[in-house]
Length: 368
Image (tube, rainbow, N blue to C red):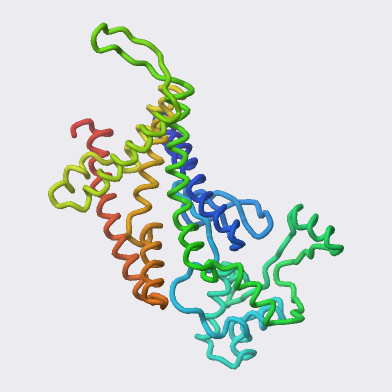
């Protein structure tokens, strides 16, 4: 039972932080008109969820981590056959990859590349596990109340589409342009940057709000060093915000220590993996609301700061790629982005293994 409570505590705390982190990306993307096809709590895999508009909200089989699938974030240049491939699938409703290749007069490989990119855009639905071949379909769509209301105000009816249903495109160029405008890659540099930074930014904002609640609303016990008298006090919101920024600065300094050969070992030894987070989450929740809020805010800062590291596939790494592309005025190749991402994953996997071993020794065997 104790182990189950520990796991549940980690799921609750990490799940909440993931929701607000990915929620930052989601809100920023939708504010700029970018399509988001999935908002999931958990690692990619089998999932259950509810579709609202064009977004499926749900939870996956492993509810640790999470993601918001912002469309059009695929690296590299666009396929030159996207418009023709879209027209082919929409005309057919349900189409084999080979059908699209013949319709467009291109090779199967070129058709596959274009169709997979359109799938990333949310413009078409990719093959299902039950499909024997590479089958692509038009996406289903049920308008939200807001969309139905806006359509009625305009004197029309918001359309409802069934997945795989053929759709007549009166103007292919206009239809493709409308799809492109809903992609991350169509935005100017500053809007793409806002979407990337919004996730870590919301984590840091939550921590500041939590500090204000703890120090200015709930209050804390203070012991007079001279008399030993303990009193419950509160401070001004400005002082609480100042304390929050001071803590953020301390975390930034600690994380920077990971990349200093003289302090890296000490920084790693003072860090913890998901095992330690689970144990500390349980202890904080059992200690009460204030301790749980304080621990969650500290963890939120760590999540926000770590995600701003300039290492792909973290948000900070993606931002650095955006800056590089802005300066060079050309897209970084898919191969280069993949190499950088693999290197980043390898680095963090190494950190994770070392920290996991520490936590097992510390929390499980108690002999660290």
